Length: 539
Ligand code: ADP
Ligand code: MG
Image (cartoon, rainbow, N blue to C red; front, side, top):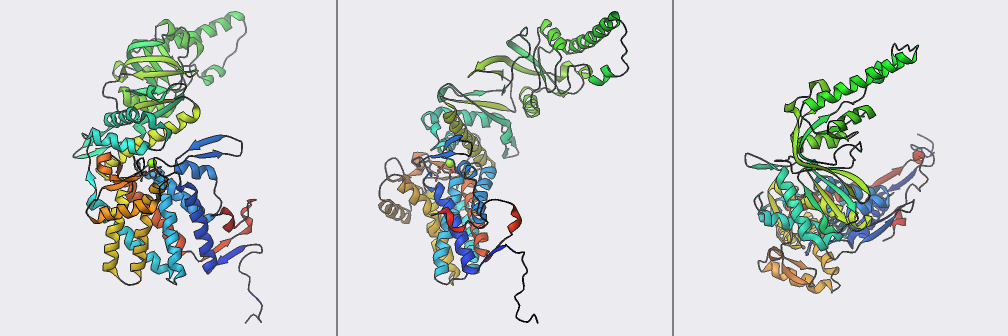
């Protein structure tokens, strides 16, 4: 025995929260995070202005952007931020939805905890509800294919909702649909799309309607030499990942220059080597060169003399996209460059956009990589339009990859909630309480959308439930009219994956937080922040 002495198993200064205390602090922190983005949900959601430590301002409605900028400290709150990040990387859209659902699941769990329902029972119920949700959502989802341009356009428009790209939604969503269709590859019935094949570039200084789809690529580079053509029609493109330079090593070894004549001869020899390199390029028939590495002044001069346009130090990722867009092969040794390695574009041109030179590689035939150049009046506007475009493109991809969509405006959550309650009755026991809580939590989506209209959400919600009970599966909240309406008719469509992923990660995070009954914070984290800022998030 230890003679009544307490045993210290943790280093001095460690903080420990156990049991109900730990649980309620974690729940409070997680709820606070969810609450901070809740009002941004939907087309009538508000924006947040974020000011970082050096004073940069971001104005956004995008859940994940807000949470990333907030630099959340609390460990449980961070888990909710992770939910948003997972949603962003898995589907792109639906980040606010996921976070809001996670917060509401915890809020409902809190009520059950107060009624002495054990956390493990809640976790078990939530897990059952989550699995059942996937089954239910799949059962009422609608099919979508590459040919359904109209439906794809609506997915893009719904995804862009709330971002300031809204005024030009029609034209922007058409661009997103066309871009995805160009790079999509159909393989025995399924569609495969690599999101990196659509490059979204942004430049301010023009209206959103001036945004354009380039069947090829926009590159943030200029033509390297003033004597080179700024516009090449019928471009035959060489892609080089070697330098057009005489290597340093070749120059520094064994050079002994004793007379000016020798120096002259040496320089001439170097110049001849470069001239020969350029000759190899010209012989291949190329009239445009993109080089991933450096390009000697003399090489530039000879290229210009041959009427060849060139850019140097092009990013590796751009080189790879150029290869996909133009059909060119990236070559590592100029000696090996041949006609067969060249790619083609109808037009390669340099243009000045918002003060910067950019090279446009346009009119590629059957490009497997494309660019969208989004425009907007100011940098803040164009940033938000780009986020909208990202969501639109990712939304279309998510819908096509699993081939299914559901209707938005809170309609699918309401229907899912209704069916889950029926399921809860069949399960019975204490888990039934948790499944019911889960079902009620999902209604936070239609309720928040209803709140955003400014009208009393209760009226709208009651009407919504009644319509669903009468078989109106696609009825949701028309936020502009502050009334219940058919989301199918209104064209508010979302990829099924947005919903399944949001519900899955929200529920998993909530379950994880609920299982924690002990928070041990070691002192030696070295951070200046208080180790357990439990209550300071506010509610
Ligand atoms: P998230 O980050 O979750 O995507 P959003 O602010 O984009 O958050 O809002 C998405 C929600 O808004 C979804 O529930 C979607 O169905 C809904 N929504 C989008 N467009 C409309 C519309 N025109 N009418 C009603 N609800 C809409
Ligand atoms: Mg969205």
